[in-house]
Amino acid sequence: MDKSTLNTYFHSLFPIQKEVVEKITETFSNFVLVKNTTLLDKDTISTKTYFLEKGYMRSYLLDEDNNEVTTNIYSGPCFVNDFLSFFKKQPTKEIYQTLTDCEIWETSLENVQTNFHNIAEFREFSRLLFVINYYKLNDRVIEMASQKAETRYLNLLKQQPFTFQHVPLKIIASYLGITDSTLSRIRKEISKL
Amino acid sequence: MDKSTLNTYFHSLFPIQKEVVEKITETFSNFVLVKNTTLLDKDTISTKTYFLEKGYMRSYLLDEDNNEVTTNIYSGPCFVNDFLSFFKKQPTKEIYQTLTDCEIWETSLENVQTNFHNIAEFREFSRLLFVINYYKLNDRVIEMASQKAETRYLNLLKQQPFTFQHVPLKIIASYLGITDSTLSRIRKEISKL
DNA sequence: ATAAGCACTTGATAAATGTCAAGAAATTAT
DNA sequence: ATAATTTCTTGACATTTATCAAGTGCTTAT
View 1 (tube, each protein chain N blue to C red):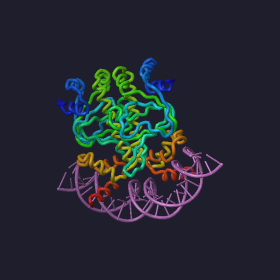
View 2 (view 1 turned 180 degrees about the vertical axis):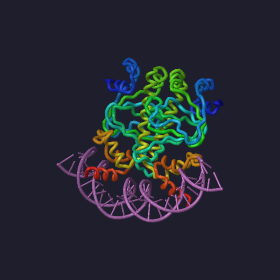
View 3 (view 1 turned 90 degrees about the vertical axis):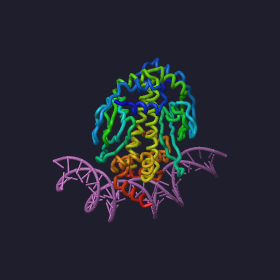
View 4 (view 1 turned 45 degrees about the vertical axis):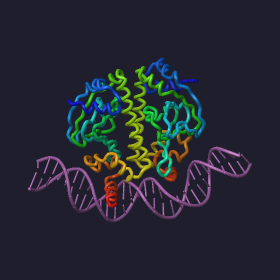
């Protein structure tokens, strides 16, 4: 039950007192999931917020042609949440799955609510987490709208180089919005240079 | 200074007492902007949160080839915010511009902070606004990654039909991540059916 | 250790979308 | 009302990406 990574994450995002962080993380409990396990399934309601301490995960869904669309790739340490399901108590549209063995912390919505309304620093932290996630997504939309596949690939390679050592290329391809054949060809082209 | 639309917006998103909403909107003041005016310029820090009561706006940026990339189209009534700039006090990367004459309300970060930390219902409202905006963006990424241009166009037409009566097609095209030529051809194809 | 199942690559071809340039149509300014 | 500007359309052609199918190699389960 070593919460040092979890606690450090709070400090890294927002200046906040050690005692306050310990109060916030008091209710978090941890568990381990092996590779290829579903953490949160489609059409269920997320009652927990998750912190991925170590390992890789993804969220994905199936489009109308039954192709997998990877919506996010998570590399710990980071929070993993289906915000809509968790806060609005709606069924998820996406599946959250481990891509490697993972170490995860969780706490309930009730605990989040208590902290959100009673600890000013947690409120600020929560909002900041939203802002950061929102802008990552925004940057991705801009990329998708304006950059070609090769550029998106090179950006991802620069931003998350370690992901490529743990996540299959076909999943990375679907995250980039291209087929695995196209990604394979892009990589071939680049390796020629 | 009729705040009824603004106040109603709060109620529509989240059950909240009339008196509490009036307290929250107390500090909002209004103004009018004519078509094609910049509300928030690139590289400036957003010190206000905006509520677009009436009219159309967009946010956009220029990519490396100096093409406009429209990141969002806003149709009042709705909040218009550069969250990153407003909450993290960072320079915006995008330009926020009116597309028609607009009626806008604004209040300062200080007022938002006071309400965020003192009014539980406002905290819930704020978070909900984030959640909703986050998922709109998430849906857009999924669309961009998995649907072709024609489908994205038809979805937008269904979801925001009135936008097409007030926003030039070239802006809609850049929002869809395609060129205006391609949008023109898509519309021609569809009109044939 | 072997078989089965995935992940990845590659070729041939097709579909989707972009580029550039010109002209038509609509809007805005004088 | 006219001119100027911007938006929209269209054609010819180029580029990007998808599709389908086959084959290779790697991983996993028995």
